[in-house]
Image 1: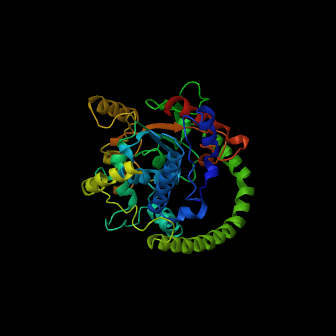
Image 2 (image 1 turned 90 degrees about the horizontal axis):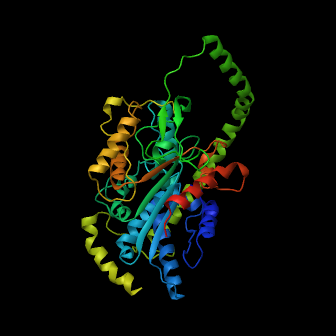
Length: 426
């Protein structure tokens, strides 16, 4: 939420530095800047789709010959992108353009519902879903999308949906997920995972991809469990804990003052933005927001969309304290294809089995049934998953795409370099 094109400035500049303008046209979508992100993933995707179509038509009118399409989404933008490619597919664009790269950085693919049991979790899930307009309800999966009686994120991951069909058409599907300190979108959701092995790094040995500054973990073999170690004496542990607590007392005192003030400001602002968001949504639905009424209200499921797609082709061509579930309840660990195949085969299943064996013993998180179904569907399509270990900042969500020029975000430049060197294809 509250994203804007400046957040992707470094990514765009790195792309341009590597690929000249006569080889690659870059559109940094502007239609959902700042508070417009409150208006819902679907409305945001309709805006972005309109922006993409307008951009391509403008380029073609100037003589450009566009042949391929790649989509990059950051944070909430990755969900908007997943919806937008379904719209583009349904409107016939994938019959004209070859889908090449689909990439997300720190995107909450499973939403942001806290996978924790207890009162604290319930309070957070209630407050978060109630203060961020329709986008909040969608991210916390408590919405009922259109006439489906299901959350939008569940529809986005339905194997029979146009969104999954569109996603499967991309040659490369890649995601980058922070393993620690992502306060906006934690690891389990950005990596599409049933488990979070990174709650205690002291127990793990990281296996990094060589040449990228111990930041990118090796996808097939990201971690190795360290052998159990004897705990230090009780007195040593108590002394260490006391020292840490003493250093944090000033911070706790400051937060005692700032948190109540910040909470009041947050709730007032959220109320104002929610009202404004509802007004924008109403104008959009009435066809008064610059996009034709019903232009992007297409069937969501493949069977229902077939005739719509066929008709569109001609149109386009003409123009926290974590309580995990018991390990025994997990029937399937998170899988990962190489992102370059569209269906499972023997090698896919063998690869998934090897990863299950590797991470056996990590408890399955207390996710909802919808989230488990999302994981299965998205893993079946196949993402290549890169876990990212940013060491030097406590706000890795911003650092992963170098959201600002501060020196402490330089580790994010390594992430973008890896993506451009190893995964992005034109």
